[in-house]
Amino acid sequence: MKSRCGMVLEKIFTSEKCQATLQVPVAGDIKKRLSLPADMSLPDHFLAKQSISPTLDGPINRRLRRASLSEIGFGKIESYAKLNKLGEGTYATVFKGKSLLTDNLVALKEIRLEHEEGAPCTAIREVSLLRDLKHANIVTLHDIIHTQHTLTLVFEYLEKDLKQYMDDCGNIMNMNNVKLFLFQLLRGLGYCHKRRVLHRDIKPQNLLISDRGDLKLADFGLARAKSIPTKTYSNEVVTLWYRPPDVLLGSTEYSTQIDMWGVGCIFYEMACGRPLFPGSTVEEELQLIFKTLGTPTEETWPGLSQNDEFASYSFPYYEREQLLHYAPRLDHIATDLLTQFLQYDAQKRVSATEAMKHKYFETLGPGVHKLPDTTSIFTLPGISLQKDPGLRSSNVAVGRNKQKHSLLILLQVNSAGRACSFNGERCSRSLLGSGWCEILIVLVADVQTWTAPASQQKRAV
Image 1 (cartoon, rainbow, N blue to C red):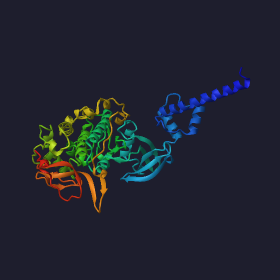
Image 2 (cartoon, rainbow, N blue to C red):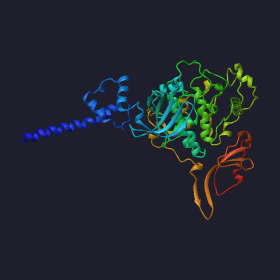
Image 3 (cartoon, one colour):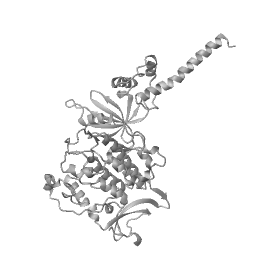
Image 4 (tube, helix red, strand yellow):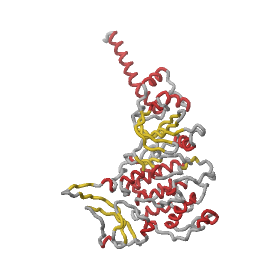
């Protein structure tokens, strides 16, 4: 029979054990209810206060959530440490930083507030939209810090963007990776478009890439929430190379299709290693488009005959070229999808959701269409990036006073089989003509000129 003292000690021990086991789920429940990372450590003073006077055990409204996050340390500049500057623009400076709350790297977008005008409208748009967009392929906005002179947006940190990724692999991407990046871009845009949000600035620099290969839409400064289908917007949106012809010709009435033209341009650029329409002016951009896709007519683009800007340019008539000639690394299935992106009539452009169902993506399997919005495609078995055959990953072997480089190089080769350029230098398409093609070779040793074997000398049809 237990002594009275033993029973008391057992009761105390059992009580303490119960309290200890209850402490973990309480903290976990708080983090879940406040949408905080599961691995984040909550401050002791905050947990102590909640154990004495719990305020988060009932319904949580916006005011209560904001007060709780502030008490934890969110919304305070001292919760973040700046590491180094990443870039600077007209209104904002971006720093690489570290969160003292989570110990994770972050990107700090510090927006300067002008006393006369207050916060730039681009910053207000970005904050208001990203606050409600939660998706695996959209950059996460972790925190917002408002002081007298600055508005700081705290984003998840990703090492590089798609432009840097393509540069790092010598502009020769593995076609598996092209497919994975394109699908993720469509997945992120499809989520936005379902919520009637237009990004309006699709370009490689605004697509961030994680080490695993997650692609995330970023920089929503030009984005708009489109509530009325016929609402008029500015036509000064989208970087020139990725701007659709209807916007180039002054259209201010557009919908989600504005983003899909840019998707097609990026698809081509990833596969072929160069921009599709690198115009320096609006007129040159239109001319490059028309030379490739053919000069549009009233039949291919209803309503074009009423466009005064189109008439003012007096473009010559160009026949449509076969996209296969411009994109030798894309097969007929991939070229069909590319063609659906690059439609003159905006209403005929494939939507992001429809494009994800295209035959081109069949090899990814059905699982990619069943994932929750916030789950990465890389959680699926068999989905992973493959090694890009680019110049930056070349192997170097040193011999007697001589270096040999094993490089995978994209050569521009004419119909006679003589190389006109190598080492990733880009040639103007207007100089190449229909007699040129591109081939991918492995080049070993120091070479100044190279002639293709007869078996590889082929003329573009």
